[in-house]
Length: 225
Ligand code: NI
Ligand code: MN
Image 1 (cartoon, rainbow, N blue to C red):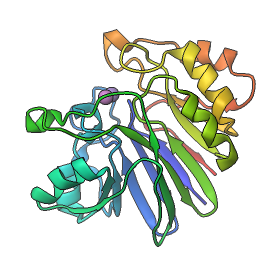
Image 2: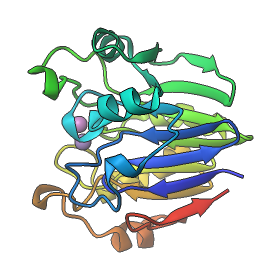
Image 3: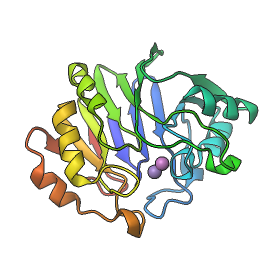
Image 4: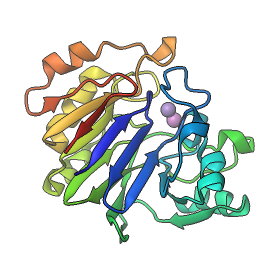
């Protein structure tokens, strides 16, 4: 069984056979975080979609403590290797097999400066299709609506994690179209209401989505697949 816990903003904990992973672990400075970064143990993998502080977050801290493998793009990978972390780099469009399943990196329309390294070049931002125990999760990262999302339809995504907050990413209206492109079975809205500038009502998003089940999770809540 796969368990997916929302940690607020774009941060998730994904647990399945052979993997206990964080995605975009923005925890200690995340005003929505239901947990402390210190309380996480045994993290095997950390996925980082891009270099912004609200995504790279506590990745270094936790990866050092747990000896986690960080999965990210080549540029952020170089930076984290320099910092002494264990890294697996891949890039947009690439799929790789791991012990627990597979990971494919997907495009995102956004930026990726590494905030904590004074804006060092962080390559292209992305998202991930993570497959474990036969279930597929798509974390879109920070992105605007893009036609590339149509390419995900044949992936048969079980759960899509889609930003709805606007300003830096899609708003709820564009996110509804993203769900039409991706055709997931279920969608969980993310990246909203953490800061005043990305205030959004997930109920409005939920009411407009016609082709997938929408699960609105409060930080700390989880789903099982
Ligand atoms: Ni960002
Ligand atoms: Mn962000």
